Image 1 (spheres, rainbow, N blue to C red):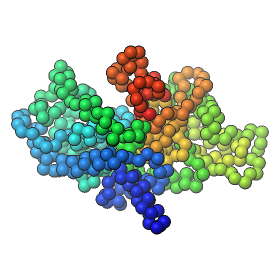
Image 2 (cartoon, helix red, strand yellow):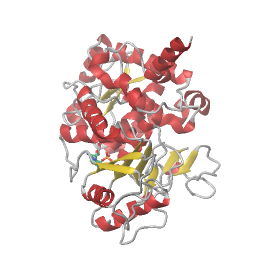
Image 3 (cartoon, helix red, strand yellow):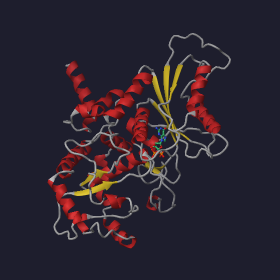
Image 4 (tube, rainbow, N blue to C red):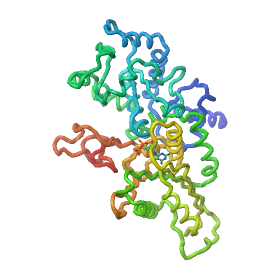
Length: 442
Ligand code: GDP
């Protein structure tokens, strides 16, 4: 009957079409199943193959994760110099660098690598990301235990240094650079472990790879969910339309505030994202259906918010629409090593992901995560470096996948040495809209 099929479809949506496992303690992570009530239903369903891979991974993680017999055996092996015998569990350890957006993308990539190579992903969230995400896998933890024996070395080892328990490198004899290359060469690269056929079964929807991974892995902790839902209920819930505007300015000297402001206004006008204001009128003409639009601005700085808010307060809109403009925080500078700062950043990424219309900023992984979580194709604001706004202030992104800014050279097309574009022979890979050397899926 109608009622039960309605309930059924709600249940399917609650678990994101099977993407999320059942059996979690719901109270410990309210957002895991509640977020679906705040977002529009994704038009992208995870494939049955992906779902089965995830359930298999969860089993593996439960069997090999921290505090299991296998984990203890691996630790013992790591701290002894002779490493005879094998364990049935292999691991990949993720350590943080850069801001939260970069970190989320690299954790998602590491997770996919772990799934494809039957490794167990352990993440070192240290103190500055402590408590901002829920545990993603049931009945276990993905947090690298504090007493993990190699932790001290992660920070002295630069990227590229690798320890492999199978190959007998002991923590007492870290690798030097010339030794590293053969080890890296011995690690399975993606092509052999993820052949086209498996890619097709796992992600038939080429532009929803990151979308599924990020929705599967990253659930705001109850503390973060509190920030998100309080903001939502206070400012967004009653609006007819929610617009997210992320203004990420990497270099304030190169991109003067007034130029960025003009660029934002140009974007709003050209793409008709918000109505113009009528500077000749004091009061909007009475109209029956006034649409209310709530604009959430995420930025480290307050000026962009101040000017847009003021514009819509000082003047009526030409069509009578009611525009609210809000900014959750303005932290001014990127803080390092502070979990409240990351908590706010995560809350803002999540709030942006609840938008109906999203404008991100060029080159920003912070924006990529918001678009992936939201399942949104953003308008990409080009933050100009120079004294003039540009003619195409915010073209629409072709997909919601993140841009890989620095791909290795083998992604160039051999005949032309160019990066692939939308019409290139490399299927589903294009040059990024916002980074000419980068590539992305579409
Ligand atoms: P990207 O540098 O834009 O690619 O994004 P990242 O997230 O990797 O690094 C930027 C970091 O700066 C974020 O993680 C935050 O710590 C901070 N940040 C940048 N923009 C914002 C913002 O709009 N809101 C908040 N709360 N923090 C921001």
